[in-house]
Length: 136
Image 1 (tube, helix red, strand yellow):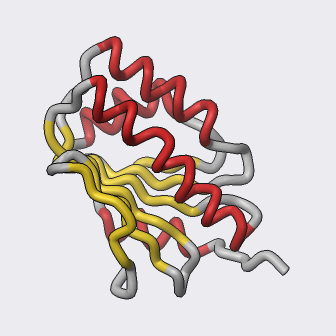
Image 2 (tube, helix red, strand yellow):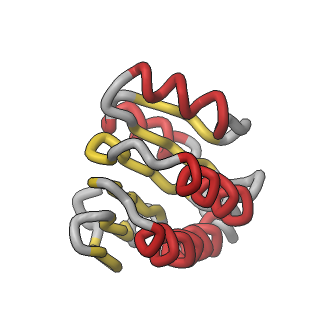
């Protein structure tokens, strides 16, 4: 996403980038998250997904979790519940992990038809943008 601009950044926890040329976003997650991080993140993720939906009819978002740490059970449940409210059936979501083990663990909880899991950001980006159709 060379033409992407940073639209929000929270002190080494997440960076949200918008690529206007593609009408898609990438979200890089890092560090150990607190309750405040999750509270700040969820509405910002929802905003960028709505922005992408307005271009494609469905959001196109890449989440890079390669620098993220494992969440506590309570925070994981909050993120999962927030994701269930934010992600719609027509959205395409690519999630990148640092290891296959973490990928398998999360896949058990977050698997949907238009969500794919990767250990390569390049592969995730290719999958995410292979099916982009611009809304009329």
